[in-house]
Image (cartoon, rainbow, N blue to C red; front, side):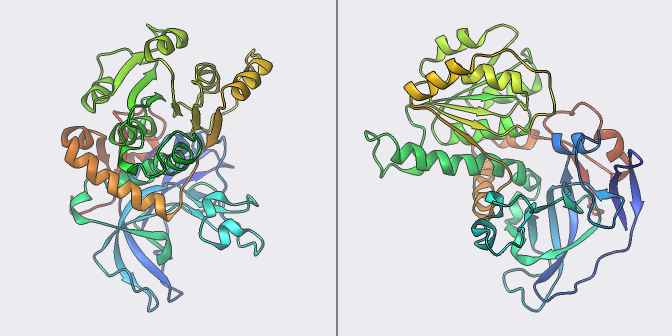
Length: 374
């Protein structure tokens, strides 16, 4: 079968032929891969910044944003059947009996750092024709979401953040009604999203759906396909080419939430300076090595203390976030059907993956398709 793999030692990315997997445990399922998204992490792996093959292998099969169809199940798998659509998760538990997070199914909060990640760290990914994995790591997908379900994994980053925002916003300030409807989480609050890539756009959609007055800030000058999508969901786009952070903050007022999805440390640091009183700053980007930037840590510390601010990071996600992402994709498809459809920039055969992974993203999400039925 075909797979798209990176060879770190040889510094190559290419399509390879490998043996199809087989079920070896009763709790496993075999999945025929349909769609696999290309993201910034894949580009960095293919630039050889990181990415670790499984032990004993010289290559790493790429891909962690995936949609597949179950073709076979082990005898111990009761919640899935052949023909079911599924999205697989990425991170696998570390196996340390003392790691409470992994032991309880929350490996996205792993304490030891010895987890593995499909398509990223010590485990092959999903950019291949067939995959075998434990059924517990597969989330069922409603059939009507087939065309957009490949967006589930990048949306889980926002869902994990939204779950933590819900807890913080309902329990931290004493004047907020603890019984507020989670669907109205952001009513009366403002949110600033940094970046117009897939994670940024999906995060903005989740924030708008939750009631936040949402602003998106990035370098791109309107009009463009990406900035048009921002307006179509009811958010406001502002370009950093025409407005500084201070001008942006003056126009918004108190910024209650900053959702960083730019992966650019200089940009992220500037935004921290305009976070409002009692504000929460969510970081999703994993920037590569960049030049040092002059800053005033004392000013930042003083501001965070005196303004009761919170800084949190969100990476990867657990099963609750995958389920929430599918619910929100259903909401997005109903509220903004044209926008949601446009998030998929195009589907391409695996033979084009090596070229596409190095190109500037075409639209929002470029997808490698293994679906022979079209």
